[in-house]
Length: 217
Ligand code: DX5
Ligand code: ZN
Image (cartoon, rainbow, N blue to C red; front, side, top):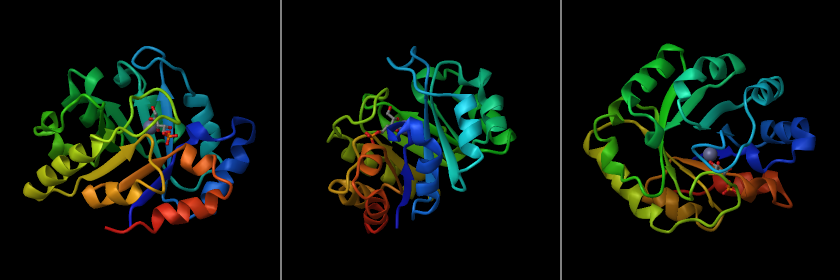
């Protein structure tokens, strides 16, 4: 069964408490939190004060996706706000190994995200240090975009790299994930399904989460 991680970006921000309680009562395993800086990505979302408030209600593992430049400056503050894992982007971390060590030393699970144009082989020398890899299946910055089909090949290639090295690194996919494409992603080797609009725009979010959870390899 995949780990299902609803993305709060697609929630109703006027009803964040209700939305968090819905996630708490669902079969979701994680809550995915998208932080954007208007520099690395052409959008701004929410940050530390919002995550602090969400943390007061949420009972699930908080997976914080940092779409920001120089994440090292803010990683300690995100730890304090309640992050359980931190995802940094390969594209903005020239000293990626140091970023990963910082996240680990603060007691969080470290992860790296790669954009649609970034090949998976670039992760070869960092893979063993990671808890998970996030393969962006859309260009980061916005919810509700169309899934990029080529991502499936990237998931398969990364699965092969992880299995050949006998590592237990998890593969997360993020962007345009639907109930329809979830099984092809899981079959290609994805372990964690992030879903924003598929969950929060659903007429029955609890049932949609159950449907994602029921996808099998
Ligand atoms: C996009 C974010 C995603 C986003 C996914 O930059 O990283 O997590 O919330 O939204 P959907 O599932 O609606 O594509
Ligand atoms: Zn995300």
